[in-house]
Image 1: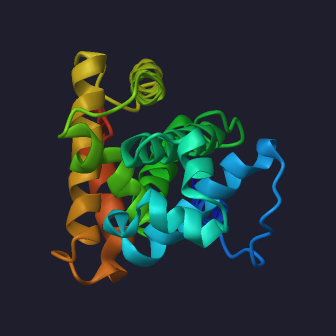
Image 2: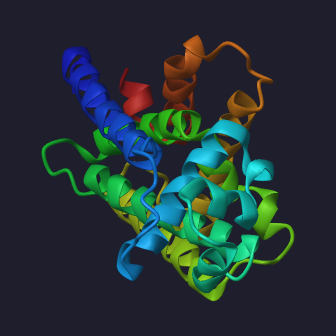
Length: 235
């Protein structure tokens, strides 16, 4: 793929990432109407929680504050979420669903090569994590997983997302993008760990200059993508 083609590909998938961020951030609502249908109150509580996390982090969330923000009684909020952990797990589930659906757009894009999809995925992973740092922390951080408080439904979607990663890793191996001799599960764990580590260093401010993200993504892709020794000898 030429430089111009890859540049267009990157920006196409970056647009998908930005769109995902906007989906997660759509929480600026009109003043709350205290008379809700039961069907939409749950979603209003979730939307308001997203806003609270984006503005003040997970620590800013409580069911009391949430009820006040939406304009309902605490009893009404507790009807849908019996505690803060259930609420946070619900948001993490939605994050994984959006993550899966957006990543699939890259994985299944027949208009570009398998290597192009892999490079696009790496760039999308990094920009998506930075654009949605609070949600990324909730999905992959210690708030839920270190405390071992994940709900069964959250565990299932998180497991399904990782299994999808293993499946796609195997496909990339079959197409010569990743080394075929490595175990697919271990390779998926290592590659995801590499990307997660880079994302965390950027999110936490250890790598304070994010202007080099493109270069880091290119470097990660070059390290991970299989290079046939015969091709190296011919070059």
